[in-house]
Structure formats: C-alpha cells, structure tokens
Length: 331
Image 1 (cartoon, rainbow, N blue to C red):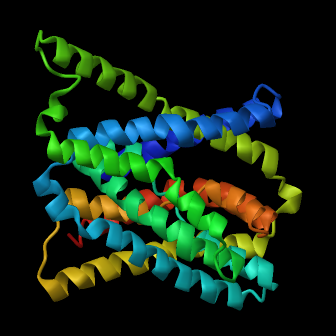
Image 2 (cartoon, helix red, strand yellow):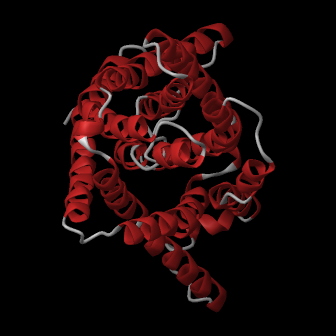
C-alpha cells in the first residue's frame, strides 16, 4: 500500500471515530460535562503518560543532536501560516475579532492527536519522536505568539502561568531527561530481567503505556462530541470558512514545505524520509480542535472556529494524502 493511501486510511478511520463522538453527543450519550471531563483527562493524564513512554523509548543523544531543529521548525511553520492567515483575513474584509480568529485558525494545526498515529504507522519511533519534538516547540509558540494573535494585544500573567504549568511540556522534558541520563530505561517494559528493581520499572512503564494508549481514541471521541455540541450548519460563515480551510490545508503547508526544502539547499543539510514526510504530515494538518476553546477563552469568533475545525478536518481527507504523495518527489 502506498504511503498516501496509508495516510488517507488512517485519517478516514480517525474521522469516523470523531463521527461516533459527534453521534454520541447528539444522542446525549456524551454530555457536555462528560466531554469536558474527557478533554481534561486526555490533556492532564493520558497524553503526558504517552509522551513519557514515547520519549523514553525513542530519544537518545544521537536523536536529539539530529532533531534539535524540529522545535525551531515548529516556530517557523506556525509564523508562516499566521502570515498566510493574516493576508486571508484582510482579503475577506472581516471585522477585527473575526480577522484575528481567522489568522489564529490558519496558524494552529492539529499537530499532535491527528498526525501521531499517522507517522507512527509510517515510520514507527522516528515519526513519533518528530511529532513530540514538534509539539515541544509548538506549545511555546501557541501560548506566546498564538495567544497574542488571537488577543491582538499583550500577554497576561495568567497565560505565562498556564504555559509554565503545561503538563505536556514537563512530560517532554522529564521523558527526555530519563532517556538521556538513564539509557537503560528504554528497555523498561520489554526486559526479561528477574531483578526486583527491573520488575518494578517494567510495571511502572507498563502502567504508563496502558494509560497513554487511551490518548488517541479518547481525544478523537471528545473532539467529535465537542463538534457535535458546537457546530450548527446555520452558523457557518461559508466564505471565511472556505478561506480558512484553503489557507490551513494548502497555502500554509506549501509555505512550510518550501521553507524546509530551501533551508536544506542553503545549509546543505539532508533529512531522512521519516523526518521530511513527518514534517509534511504535521504542517498539513487541519485546524486544531483546541482552537475553539481558545477562541472562547480569549474572546475570538467561536462560530468560525467550530465550523473551521469541522470543515478543515473533512477536507484534509483529500489534501493530506495528496501533499504526502507530491512531497516524495522533493525528498
């Protein structure tokens, strides 16, 4: 099966899980309170467990020395996308609030929960490590540059407090530290040792892995349920929605891909297929589900946010496999 077909199939499966969440929300099987609780559970518990397990299993000094550029690429790709979003918002003549929201939606892709299972299927630990390192850089960009985009002003102290309290960032740092300072930790969960200490470590790692494996299905169900509660076709702003979808799924990834390719040509650096295609997958993702929550919290356009998440996720079934297919010619 060609990689673009694998990508299409993976996105289709995830989209169907989201549809189940949507249906469950419409049938009141997943109430707003349950959906909110699931979202908190994923962000505060299951995802950090997933990060710790994956960082310990995939990170080593050689990998970090090679992948140092990935968090910086997250910064550049989001800034390029924001530039495209700013031009798009001006083109559609939106009011100031909708224009800032338009820019924010184009800038912030779903860089973790959708691409993680895709690149894991394609490249295993190499793909997972790329997404987690990208996430590390993108989290800082989101809570600084991203919030400034949405608010159109200075950042409050509460934003910095939230950033420093981000469990995902500390899980990334902690997992990387364990992997670097205790290289043998990568064997935890796979060792055959009868030593009491190793058995205890295997048990801890097995527990973290079992909890972490819940991240993707729970996040997709919660996403679908959130969309079911938020999205009404009567609220769709069709022209801005088309603009956000086009800029997020085509313009922003093309800018990021050409920047990456140009940087490779200028510096003479070379990337592995896993690194390059993983980068393509991440920057090609639809609008992040969290954008609706940020728009609500920071006085953005909630209706445009919700409809853009749904529309861009649906259209990404076509655009992401297409960009992956075309990008193989650029490696």
